Image (tube, rainbow over all chains, first blue to last red; front, side, top):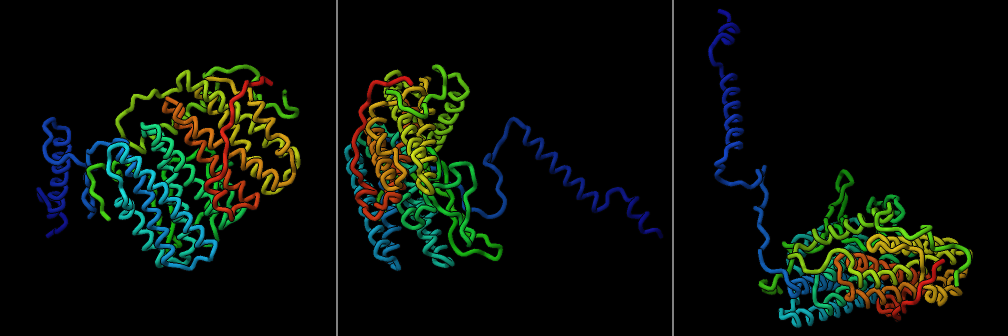
Length: 276
Length: 208
């Protein structure tokens, strides 16, 4: 008996059945996709386990909400700097700088709070929950096990000042009340000065101007982390930025976090209750 | 008075907004405006997008200040600045030239005139090879520029005008911080974060 002949001659082998079945499913999916009466879930397909997508709330974004968001960034920066003071290890000049930065952010937060109330809103006096959950907490966790926590804390401080500067820069255009526009533009300039100050006080003249400004690449330190600079572009950037922190893995890679100016998912809407 | 040496004029005659530079500049501004639009999703305001006639009058004055600043940084380089100070003067001068071109791009005004009074006020202090003297003069200039832009900001009506000015004033602050360090004053946090500043007066432009 020829076993091979027997298999190849049968009408529907197991392999063929699987092929036919697969083809049928594919065609059915194609037909269904082309159909006019689409039913069921129309959201994009997802593979693997991921947290469910949550739609941002559909609350009104008025001047008060934008000013509350501005306040939340200031309080986020204050919280981070206070943690840096608690951790210690700063020399006298570093301690004095951090205390000045906290005072400056508190002054801006107070001004944003007063402007919020002037717009009929309730002043926000907490950190930004979305930023804390998605950025600050994981970054600080990564820094705990870093090979160079000082480097990472400084880079985090620069990144937060840059984020505050970008956010206030955007808000200065978006807000409608003249006092609020001027206050946020001043806050943008102050955060820009603070970012630059952290860099020049730690890196000196080497940190003045990024080679990026003249079209070159940004060099990295011996551990492979990009250097920070006081001036990174000719115009104030409002684009997203990356922050690299933590200990390198076996491939030399470190955790990278993306910082973006607040949007629908991180606004402090008027309907939100304080979380602190 | 027309300053000797470099001319701020790099266009021989008045250019309209359809020149290549204007187009490139306009695209740059469009990019900035798009970034802002993406960053903050908010109902469209009633503000016009392109500079109004009143905006253009203000931005023309700003353009003339930027060209004067460019000349001042160039004069410092000619005077013999070296090392870090020379790099700073080179990059900051080009920054101001870029700002002038940006204003020209969004308004259609030619970038061929500068604020003579502003130039005259600083020219002797910039014409030095001493990095500290240069840095102090430039620090004052950048802080005054930042204060002036902040003062005039709410007078600007168009989104494009405000977007460009906001993106310049933050760099004025960064440049001032670098210059404070170059001048050896970065340990004084009051000077770094709350520096004295005066509003720059507009003046009758001088064609060169």
